[in-house]
Length: 304
Image 1: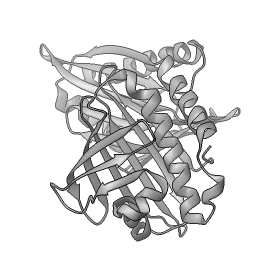
Image 2: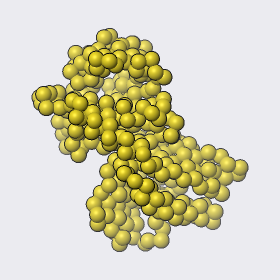
Image 3: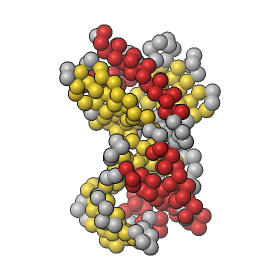
Image 4: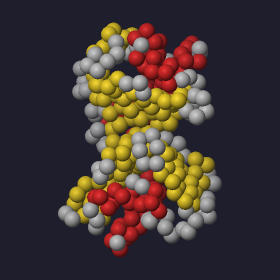
């Protein structure tokens, strides 16, 4: 199984879920790109490749295991990202995006984003990616014999099964148009007007772009919420990692998605929050917190 440098997030909708895995390697972005596009190197960690994902429109096949074959067609191939249309054994196509970048600590980070066609693919696809990225870790560090395998796949499937088992979803209608709601949720200045406004020592920074970080700190309450933005679609969708830290320590593998649609002269805001929860109690606890916080948002916008 992969180490603590792996961050997982389950976003999207119930019908069209999206898996995101972010993992750091002792490598460089250029080496990660080669590992994701060279057929010879792909065959060492992903599957036996026929063809080459070398340019937009190129097609290739991957024998993932003895019984599973996938077909890919390249939609984007650049210096920092590869996006492909992905079909496994004739199932409906999905979209896989791999992005790589060098980090400040001399490592490289790979972000894998898989937009699935169906909910019932979460466990299989998630477990497969967990295992593949673990094998890649071994390839890049020279420990190929120690990584991956059936035990890793089983553990990965358990993680994604848990992530999918108890999602929280709640809806709030806000008496403001989408542009005002978006401004309030998608900028540091907007967040400062309503987020935890009942406390007077809250600080907020937010770099609202895919890959940008946010951090909300309430020192008096001993709470920090932070993470990176996963999807930014102006006026429609905002998704981000959610790492809550308090006296009990930080949470892991949680994610939040906010979706906006018009509702009359106002805005329908849907919040979806997922995490590795083995029962419904964490979701219900968060429901109380989100209900209060969205009430603050609605009150501030109504008063403007």
